[in-house]
Image 1 (cartoon, helix red, strand yellow):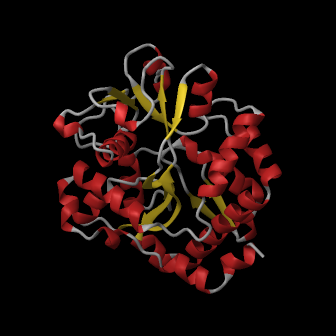
Image 2 (cartoon, rainbow, N blue to C red; image 1 turned 135 degrees about the vertical axis):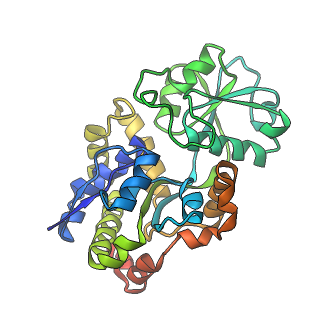
Length: 321
């Protein structure tokens, strides 16, 4: 049994990772995966380079600039290719859709979420750089960095929708279960288009690791693919695991679990391929965050021959027969 270190960048990933782990799929393929711990963006780059961790679940924006400066960071698979968010406002706001947000304040939390909001608003005709709209970040993140000032992310913070409810902001974007919790507290939740995006658990590592451990990489990917198949095909077992284990976003009742499950089951990519629309959008964010990212082709950070080989072998298709 090979030990694999696989920390995550955001605790929301645990809604799927707990299920994959408890399905036994990794162990079936001979890998013991240490997945239940968070890692910062800065730590991710340092630890992937040094070999202190084998894979990272996430780190979507910063690697493009790092690769431009010589990093051997590589993405080898993608679990979800869109942010399926909702718009959250107060019932008396007069806001019924994106067109009503001009000259409003949007509250966000974190570096990648802020970039997602910037891009989605811009694609909907609301450009922060033209002062069409204002984005307020709950965290203090130094310019050009992905991590908040040390200690801020673990400190108590109001939910984003609380800032909307109390008038600090006019609106925010939420995904389940937060959108459900906000709706249960009387907030108005508006369905909007998803944003194509490299999102959730991206399989990140170094070229040095995959070249020196190809067998571990293949078995790790097989376990993850088989765990996703379990997630999709065993809804009742999966929902029990989510309710019991996924508490990082608050305790979920049966109704919340049902919605979270349905969202993820639809969104998870069985064969771990990214979409070009998702890569294009995240690269636009990388360019905004780090100008040196412009010196590379965004596809150069991706090496999909590992998942392609498993796809061509019929392994994934066999899981769904």
